[in-house]
Length: 261
Length: 216
Image (cartoon, rainbow over all chains, first blue to last red; front, side):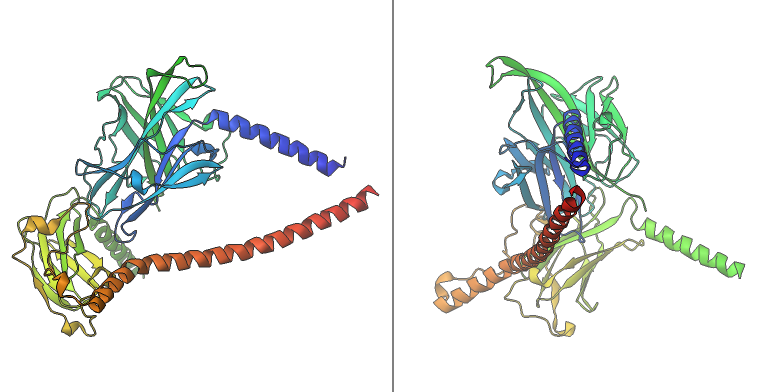
């Protein structure tokens, strides 16, 4: 065996190992990232969403995403079901979805998604991530703090669009409408591969809400950030053992920051 | 020299301040949508408050003002136009707040003639339309109630065919452009991929040869 090939195999082994470590340290997130979160005359009326169940900070690997239980848009307190518009696609060999939506009038639009419960054998629990993001059309400035009625949901206290990089994002964790004291919130960044993690702990930032269920986080990089308030609530029957296992319900909110220059 | 520099700096500063003030709280906005031959819309401040009695000017492509009036009590307006051409709606509340909204030619009905000269265009503010209906902030496709209902039976087969053709062409036009752009993209990436494969094969050959030479 030549030196070159020995080096090569060593490198590939370490690469494999590091990717395993990284994927286990990063959390699962329901990705819901629109092509723009502010619609104006420059962007045009059409917004395209990427819906993938993945590990944002390590840019994958993706997990299987079934057609969602709910996907729609809330506008002027009216919910509009958009499941018919979903287009299936494949990410890392797993199913995911794209969807295109046209916003025809000024206003605050909340996009919401409830996935099919995902059984995580490694953790022995079900994961349901109730995901939303807010899109503003034509500088309306309205309804950015609207709630869509998820069992676990983050109420933004910072307007969730038009945010500078480095700004603090504040939100309140609500469970069935009530604030959750000291709720745990996980934060990740949608890394396109340009960010190298110093070590595995950087994959997911973990913060806790205060006694009123309010949390704060300063976002150090421009791009898409995701906040997930995680609460175990109820049990479901595990598909492998038939036993009752806990259900982790996540209130997930995607926000975007832009560089100030 | 220094004073000139200073005044230049001041100018820049003033310019910046003006630029910022145009985007601050209580930013004025105008939104408009075409329902075929009528431009409907409303004037509002960021946060949702409507601007009542705001000046509205309809500009043709070359900047000519073809109509002017004020918004109603709900900040709404409706303008019926005679020709198909790009239009710019300009709203002015008179306190330094000016906003514009551009409508492209393809948003207007095929039944309208294209405008050769801005002077040909006639535009009138529609006052008999109820403001509530004019605003239409719903997600449903705005109905073209402004156009008179056509008796389907009165149309000949040819007329109907041409109407359908026009409508389909108008809807498919942007889609076709997108498909073409996508095709061009694919061709480019195919070429790049092909070059990559060639380089790769030669790379492997070179590597094998180099390996043979060193192992001997």
